[in-house]
Image (cartoon, rainbow, N blue to C red):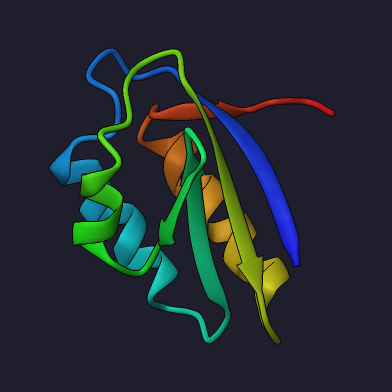
Length: 92
């Protein structure tokens, strides 16, 4: 399993339109993907799950991928989050 912590930098947080983009990217891979926010974890391939979290600006989320293409999946998910200016990876 691979995980990345991301700080949300979008003023509107992660609302429906960008959430759909993230879910669409996650669904391109065989690996399971999840998103954790405030001790709640949901399937990143579920738009309803992601939207149920109500992720706001300046919050930290954790993206995790597990499976045969987990490395490619986490890179693609991270890229869409950065490209949409939703968040930035927290350096470890």
